[in-house]
Image (cartoon, rainbow, N blue to C red; front, side, top):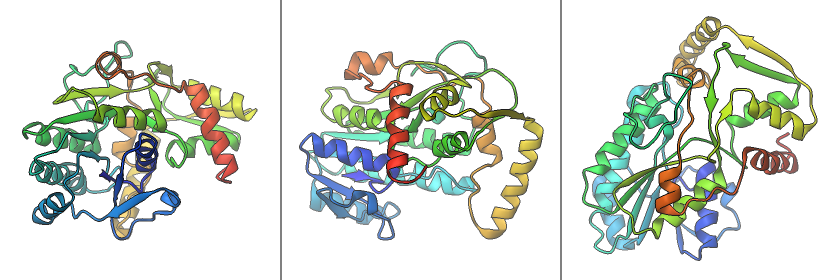
Length: 322
């Protein structure tokens, strides 16, 4: 079973699992838009992650061999919503999975945000780095990690860095801006960033199901570190575009984020830009080591940022997103 199967990363996970010859149960909500899963040979299931008893009944009926938990909330104006979905629901599912005698692996898709960035421009985040998440999202993912780590199941935790690829909508905003001739940044401080293509995350996750490792945490990225301008430089080269580069003062962007948060609270919506997101976007160093995943999982990223952006931008054009 793959939870969050109707989401951006869920789609890639489903495809990768099918390519490996697995029978896939797509765990979704009854309200989920399944357009991107059309034509894929999956069985839809509707696990109620809020209801522990229903989850245990579901586990008893299906007796899954493998569970990939990719469902979660990435945007919310409420700290409580992050904790409920990313921490409590994760625990509910993992605890229910513990009732399956034949369970071979439970893989939790966490995030590099659970560790948080380094506070200086030098060095790499490793699995031994003391977590200091800077956002409610990151803190909630770390809480989810901590809760499942106490359970006696064969779990693995994967922490991908910034993920891009077909169907992705956040980095897409930046790519669309570049296509339109603009290249905006918050502040002027130097930064080191890391990226990974969704297909590489999916392949690493499915391969991890068959690993003899358990109760381990792994970082996932493409193995390279990029300064704050490199993504735009590569995208401009692929798109054959010139841009107007500008830097917005951090203070002004924070004020704008505060206004957006206030407006969206009234409308009960989650703004794309908020104070939490600014802390993430202005952090100095998101560079991370993938050596542990390479050594222990045989992780071998297929896409460099240039190759991945070339493929992704072609997809956006083909599907008329750009």
